[in-house]
Amino acid sequence: MTSLENEVRGLLERLDVPLEAMAGAWPARSPISGEALLRVQETSAEEAHAAIGRAGAMCQRRGGASSCACSARSCAPPRPISAGW
Image (cartoon, rainbow, N blue to C red; front, side, top):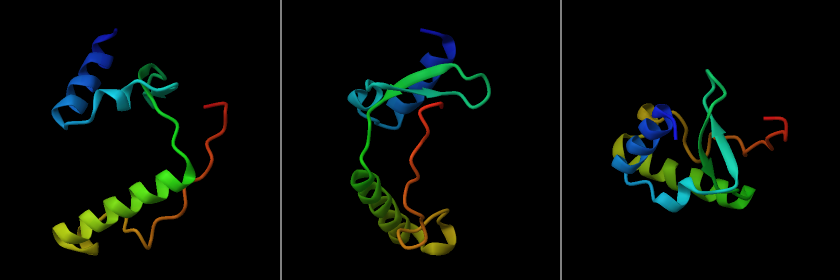
């Protein structure tokens, strides 16, 4: 495991991201180096929409739309990611 992988895992653990969320089939890569940082689980469009809705609802409770980068109503549906990524 590289030092960057360790750093990312440590950060996610401090944010209470469950370890099983970091042990999927798909590599999550650094946009800078392309290095695989961890592996993530596949998510269906329905699961993604539900997660976006939960995030939007939480954002609304914490400060309203002006403090949100994305709200449940303004988020576009997830786009398929090409297999070449």
